[in-house]
Image (cartoon, rainbow, N blue to C red; front, side, top):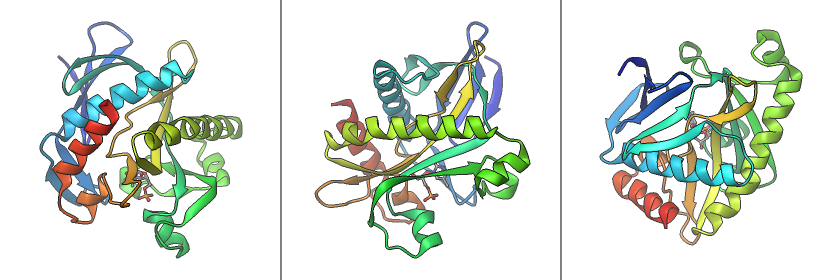
Length: 232
Ligand code: TMP
């Protein structure tokens, strides 16, 4: 199959018919804009399964996504979208770069979820953009920014209880959106322990990619634990 694109965690191939692409989830992990690298055994299988499960479930809740079907344990077929050049982050608890930017301690609850937009640009290290920066760059219109924000908050309202039922706190997560050929705005990319912070409700143990980013150990075990709880 023709390789269309190779990213840090996935390969994207031309699909079996026009309008379809195949995403293969790799075990490779990077952090800090590719400066830190490792292989996490089983990560690709976990992220493919978790993404398939969550996208299928979100679809049933009325969220339009690119997901079509799971092909094998690390491969999903998805609709080909024209991606919007923004990462949309939603935060329910202070962590990561928000803790660094504000000085608020990690684990501070956030009453009204915080939505942030990052510019998808590896050369710049995916910088945070405000609405005026987005307008200046022409990466999305103000109307589209409003739609992305509203859609990300809808996904958050669905995912918080989804993970709570699995005794997990959804601390924050990143979404990417794109346009389908029919002109619909759809959720793309993945939702996995690579793109979410997930803490055990009782112990606050980190069960996501922060175990790798921060050298906390037990990386493979954390991905397997998320697999067990999400697929249960
Ligand atoms: P941050 O606190 O580092 O800004 O991350 C916020 C959320 O976004 C966190 O759940 C991890 C996710 N994320 C990605 O999916 N990809 C990235 O490149 C980065 C930096 C964060």
